[in-house]
Amino acid sequence: MAHEEPPTSAIDVTVPDVPSLGVVLVDLRSCCVVRANAAFLELIAFSRDDLSREPLELATLLAPERRAVLESVLEEVASSGRFTPFEITLWRRDGTGRHVWLTGAVHPAHRDLAHVYVVDITQNCALVEALRESEERARRFAEASFEGLFVHDQGRVLDVNEVLPAMFRTTREELLGRSALDFAAEASRAMLRDNVLRQYELPYEAMGKRADGTTFPMEVLGKPIPFEGRTVRVTAVRDLTERKRTEAALREAESALLHAQKLESLGVLAGGIAHDFNNLLAIVLAFTGVAQRHIEPGSPAYNALREVEHASRRAADLTRQMLVYSGRSARTIAPLSLDEVVRGIAQLASSSFSKKIDLELSLAGGLPPLAADRSQIEQLVLNLLTNAGEAIGDEPGTIAVRTHAVDLEAGEIEGATTHTTLPAGRYLELEVRDTGCGMDESTRARMFDPFFSTKAHGRGLGLSAMLGILRSHGAGLAITTAPGAGTTFRIYFPIAERIDDPARPPSVVPAPRRREGAVVLIADDEPALRRATRAVLVSAGYQVLEAADGAEAVDLFQRHADVVALVLLDLHMPKLDGREAFNAIRAIDPRVGVLLTSGFDVREVLEGLRGQKVSFLPKPSTSSQLLAAVDAALAAPTT
Image 1 (spheres, one colour):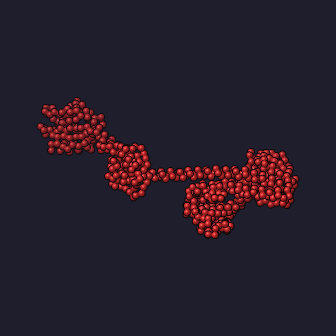
Image 2 (cartoon, one colour):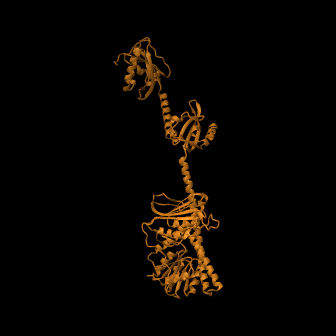
Image 3 (cartoon, helix red, strand yellow):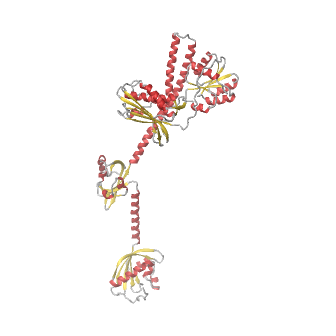
């Protein structure tokens, strides 16, 4: 647009001085400002002197790319007498911009002049933008929430976020306008309605109902908010399905842990009782043997002592079961055929079953061997079959036994009763299924407790001992049972990649002749047991030294190494245990005979002594078994 001289001051035009409204008189030919009120000058940071010293072209207040808009507007006002209001940014002398609203019309007396009215809307625009950003931020937060949000008026849904439709498996359109109670389970509707009516503002739980009819647990929290001129409620809904599942899993894990701790405590208690009881039985058996040596066979006193010995042996069997339960019984690990054990025990157990019970064997054949203790696996199978037969009783029924090899993924079978999760690998599965009475949850929870039984005259140690066998062999157990539906035990034995030669305790072989007068060093922390052992050995012609612990045994041997022919060591003693005492004694004299004795599982100890010449005698033992073991140990070579 060409520059022309602005109208002179002689032109009789005025510009109203209205506060907060900028008024500019513009020459349509040159686009220069002729007059401007104080509000406009303040807006653009100009003074009247500035305006009088040099012409101000209105276009210079605009960004270059927006000047064409002004030319178009002025052309419009020149032709039509007014122009359409619009928004634009004016740039002040200090470089800051102001967002303004412009409108205008041609001067009624001078067609070459136009009044332009300028309203500063910068603050309003900032407020609008802030509001827009706030609304956008609120929207983003609402959509990013893990909770479903909806606004409702007395239960009628007005708006929802994106989470809610997905939670209820429906669409936004299906939710809007509906009653929120349509998406609640019938049992929760009265509570939800009451909480809305009384404006309840604390979180609570209810049951939701999805569009497909399924229900789920949810947490609900409602608050009143202003909305379009009235007060409504915004409600947050959180799906509690995963939380409930996690809580249930935690409760189950806690229950399993408590059960494990209970069984562990019972195992420790049983092991401790069995250990002390074994020592007492060893004392009874030893002194019984000594007494029998001084009584004529066939006399009433001799026969009475035989009954005492018989009862002591039965008590020893009970303590062995308690040690098996605690996982601390003596074991001999060797290659074992599971099918062979099952076949033999099934034939033995079937004789005690009712004639109405059918025993079905499905043995795989060709299975790899187990690394296991034969007597304990036989006891386990016998306990399972006996338990199955008693569950059926005199009713017609079936006991099905199956063996086969399986490949398990890690965690596929959780040994809830052995408290271990089986690692991935190949296992031998032994399944014993009966059609008996089954078990309820309370019975199942206590089935492995020592001396617990549902039978009127049951002893209740069978399954307890089985648990110890499973633990000591690293096996897992899965149980399926229900009242009236029978019970299935599935036992998973790990298959060893290789089976080493068993480190079994040497068998006791009587010596060709007794070395009467030989010196035997007894080391045991139980005084009465030392006295009983001494009495048996002295009655057989041996000389005896006694030590109350491992350290005393080493000290005595060091002082009498030239005369001691055999050391009888208990494995569990204070100060120095049997293994430590053994190593110290053999360091003094590698050729001295050593006879270890214990009622616990000593396989690990014997593994550590592999290659050493050492004999072993389990507790408790009769006087004849003790003498046979001593005679054999003295006769055995030590190098």
